[in-house]
Length: 366
Ligand SMILES: NC(=O)c1ccc[n+]([C@@H]2O[C@H](COP(=O)([O-])OP(=O)(O)OC[C@H]3O[C@@H](n4cnc5c(N)ncnc54)[C@H](O)[C@@H]3O)[C@@H](O)[C@H]2O)c1
Image 1 (tube, rainbow, N blue to C red):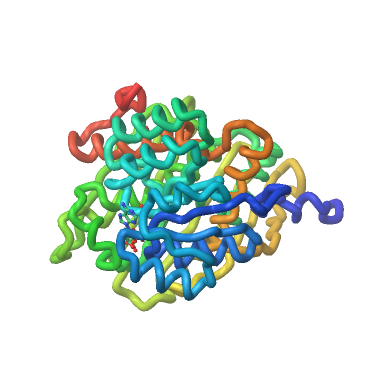
Image 2 (tube, rainbow, N blue to C red):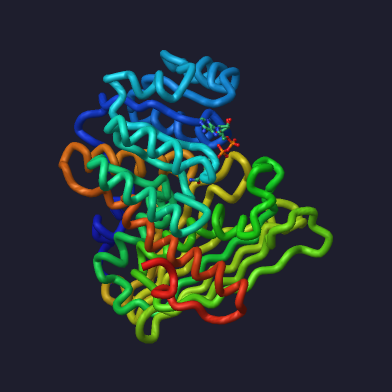
């Protein structure tokens, strides 16, 4: 076997940042994800946060103090009045998103919206339309695409090292504290809309658009939430390619038993890895990846060490890509318009569960 080539280990998975990091960001929502991921990531990236607004002013004040943000805005209008804010970064429950986006884009600010874009496909479509009509750049914070393991897998697949893609598997078996998000627990599709959406978006990035989805969901006996917390999603890609997402959020065994793994296979190679963010909760670990390709190193597994995590580092990817799109005057990879395809997957899975049948993606929206 020839010696390791540098490109076998250098999978160029790190988020790409804009040349100008001085664009002003105004944040709407001062909740858990802004504190745990947005602001830590922006500090690492050196992005400039001008200030923050939350309907609960004390919440915004406390976060501003914690992260030394210059301004707490008393209203959304006050934030939008600031000329030095170029991008409004919205991280509020998605049921309120459309109204906020309408107000933001009417003032011609670019937007980064937290996922899910909406709890119904038509509402997401409306958000895409108002952003397009306003002529602003609009992106979604679907950051798993920039998690080290998924981006590195993207590079391996892009270089053709797996051959023709044959199957994809994402498995998660953890204990999730749904009570942290009380506004979510009454939604029938809580798991799909707020968690598995990440895996569907990651799989679409790597494997393209599926044809149909057949999904099933169940509760854990005695659980207190209305929504299922176990999901099984069978994904039919064109030809012979298949995908599977299997989530259980009720693992009562000690944490050393929890796992969050992925495996991507083709005719010439295999990638296997772990999603470190779901280990050692809530601190997390680095992602891992190992890949084998008949075309480059025979049966030898190649295991580059990955740095960074889904939380918070991948949040540099979503904001960084929006900023680069603004700089280069092009659509961001994570545009809200592109995200409609991920939502087609999510709502196909939802309908499949409701009707107990495979649902073609073309049945959703369009
Ligand atoms: N990308 C990810 O991995 C990820 C992870 C967690 C949460 N999220 C998303 O982020 C969003 C927020 O989640 P969270 O966990 O921070 O929730 P949270 O409940 O901790 O915080 C939400 C905050 O939004 C504020 N808010 C609500 N409506 C508002 C409005 N109209 N204007 C201003 N502030 C408003 C609330 O007062 C609250 O402080 C959700 O859409 C969720 O899906 C994404």
